[in-house]
Structures are given as C-alpha cells and as structure tokens.
Length: 307
Image (cartoon, rainbow, N blue to C red):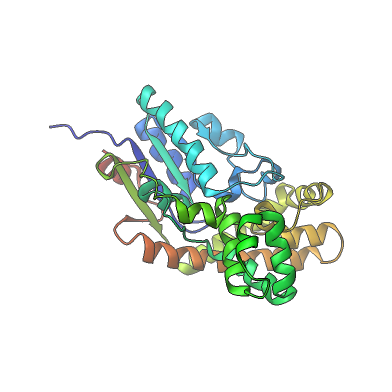
C-alpha cells in the first residue's frame, strides 16, 4: 500500500548546516513549498546578512514567509505562528506540503506543541536582557519595562531585577505581556504528529565551522557591508530583534568606521559559531525524538524518508 505524503516536513539544524539546500531538494521531491522558520529571515532589511533565498532558489520552488517584515516592526513567535497557520490552511486546500525550515527552535516547538502559558525564551534574548540588567541596574530596566509593558511594570517593584528581566524577555520573544501568558491556556499544536515528518541535520563540528567562516566571507563579497551601512542609516532601536541578528553589530561597526572589516568578519564568524553551538545543544535536548539526518543526504535517501 502506498504511504501517504506528509502534510509538512520540518527541517531544523544549526546555522550553515545546509538546511535551505535540503529544504529545496525535499520540496522538489514532494512538489512542496519552502516555509521560513528562522526569526532573522523574516526581515526584508537584511537579505544578505541573514542569507535570504536567492532569486535562483525561488525559481526552483516557491518560498514563503521570507523577507516580508520591516525591521522596525516588533515580531514574535506568536506573530509567526499566526502567519504560518494561515499559510498551512492555504497549502492544505492546494494539497501541497509545507517544507518548514529554519534554526529558531522556539518556532518549531510552538508549531508542534503549541505556545505554553509561559513560553521558553531563546538564549540570545535571555543573554541580551541579562547583560542589560548588569549594565543599567534595576531602576533603569524597570523604566524600559514600563515603556514596553506597563501592566507588568505596575506589578513589579523597581528593585526586583530578576522578575523585571523575565518580563522583558517574554515580551520581546513573544510580543505579548507575561501577564497575558499567565492568564491564557496553552494553544493547540498546528500540526498533527501523524501528518508530518521532522528532521534535524547533523554535521561534523569542524566542517560546520568551516562552512560558517566561508559563508560569512561570501556574504561580505555579496555586499553585506553596504547592507549594514543602509541598516544603520534607518536607526533601528538596538533592542529590536533585527538589530541583534548574527553579524549585524560587527558589520554596522565596520560600516561606521569603528571596527576594521577584518575584525568585523572575525567577530561575526565567532558569533555564528557560538550561536550554532547553542542551537545544537537546544535541538539535542528539546527535540530528541526528531529523526537525525546526515549533512549531504542523497536524493534517494530523501525520497525514502519523505514518503
């Protein structure tokens, strides 16, 4: 008996692990649509630095939810979940599978498990606000919370650094107040386990580091420095998620002349390697039952796995 084609194929993995190429190959096999699950790739302002699909990629198969938001707009996992939910409805009607690919683990967790009453926070957001707490102190941090989330600011003492930091992490990661999350029941998953296949790419660490280094040099050759200069000119709030995308800060510094280009490249490559390490750890702990697939899987392997 012929096996049923999956409604969705989920592909996760660290940055520069070949996720996008694999997603295109799977989409070609299944006549599917590639769907973004990377929080940095939603922004149109950073097409080179975040490695948005090229025109050639988009000519092979349709791509959705890439570069469709302004860096000025707050964007959260709840926003992405809403957008991908509408898209999945459309694809079901067209009987085309969604090939959902990216490196943002929280997106995949929300998609497959629903949004919890108090969501998990990505490591980069948590680190950012803890650094801000150390730099600014509790009262300044409380003022920041009051501007972003007056409901939680009213509930918390200006001296309560830990809870203030938590409230800021939650509103940035999700776009909603912690007060709202605490009052809401968890949402239902958008995908049924029996109608999807979920994969994590595994790749040798030395090879991954080499690919990260090479990819960033290629980005610079494509015009990443000029893109960073244009991004700096629109004066995005440094606390906005887009401003903290991997590589943005060192390249902006190089564009403004406060850092040499070679130093900026080295820092961005180091940021990417550290980020990849966090992604690998997160995927190992949070998605232990996802099927592991080796980097560079053949088309025959893909066909066997996808149907």
